[in-house]
Length: 236
Image 1 (cartoon, one colour):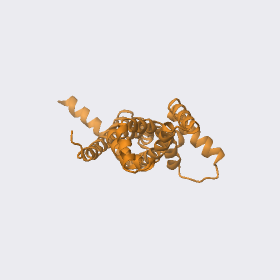
Image 2 (image 1 turned 45 degrees about the vertical axis):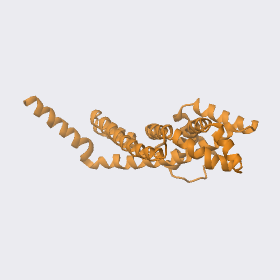
Image 3 (image 1 turned 90 degrees about the vertical axis):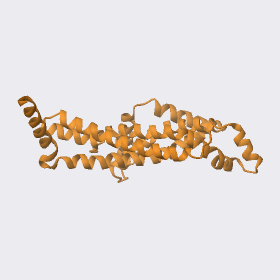
Image 4 (image 1 turned 45 degrees about the horizontal axis):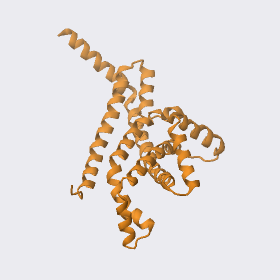
């Protein structure tokens, strides 16, 4: 078993070198905070944008409908990393250079713009999945269009679109691994720093993968419980 002892000792030495020496684990801890902040900010703002764009896509007004379609086509048709750099280096770097916001907020705005396009399609599909009879029933009760939408249609649509929204949130967390392009040290960038400093690739990359997996697994379980709570009122 000498080979195993040698291998295990080597793993321990690499672990110490990559994470313990010079407190390099703090890079990953701080990176987790950046990833979570950007993701939560982006998904909340993206949900607002998604609802507005979905409203435009469902509108009978040609102008609003055109805005929704152009926004969705452009955002879904361009890479998220390109959008991130345009927002950071062009919009906030040149046109809005006087705005002194933290990098993670600007990155969150960029990802919310991207997420909003996908959220809009999810929301639109969820609203269209509700039978028209529900709208007619609301109007027959004396509710106007807005009241019918917010009190009858959207609560029912939420149950249908919630799994897809959760999937978008999970995807968003993984997509934020590109924020290193604008100088943010998230989980992925922290792993890259450790790799370039120690000249060890295996341990930092595996550690980064494990952190992402744990975060997403915990989030999946939590969102699954929320979904089950929303389904409790179903009688099917």
